[in-house]
Length: 270
Picture 1: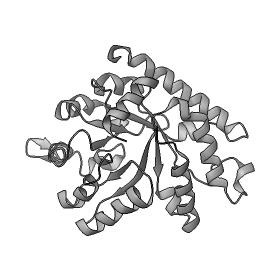
Picture 2: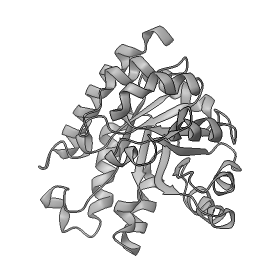
Picture 3: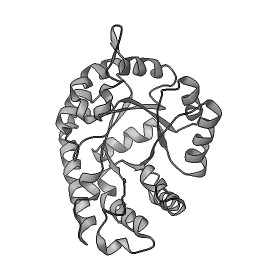
């Protein structure tokens, strides 16, 4: 999915919601847990219920890799079920020396039909470049994250700027707003104005709204650009909206609430 297609879908739906499929077998409804296809059945029901309200799905690969071969198969079946009208993100946080990153890129962009992958930039340009070589694919680089550990490195000063600012400015030169996004945590709302000045055109993947307490309104006001430029992710707040057999209905209702709120922030862009 290229940028033009993504922006068109956002404008058509008046939504920039990304649903996180961070599916944990121990947290899905009990009546599903004994099924051999429990994860896939749960994910498909969530996708069916939220499809009209979001423009993207983010699969956190750790939740699937932890289950070994069955988990990888469940991830593959899940991503294949997501229609091409929605941006399919592998939240894998890969990044290694060039030839290794090339294999990661093949795994997620060729063996699996993902449109985007999250990448850690610590090892520098040669660890990120293999992902950027794919046409109509997105590399989503960790910028300023929502966890407490962001204080350990990302928010440390390097001369006149923070390390995360150095990362944003440097990585932006490796690609362009049509193949590079950045992860900016919703709990870092105070930094969004400055970050948008550094990166006026790029999309941001924004986790941390919902269960982690980030404010959708505040982020939208501070970080939206002319193409919206945001994919706001909600995972637990949506997929675990109910522990009962109505889990999919409730997930759809929460997604609809996000959708409705997002539409209120978009009229000036249409």
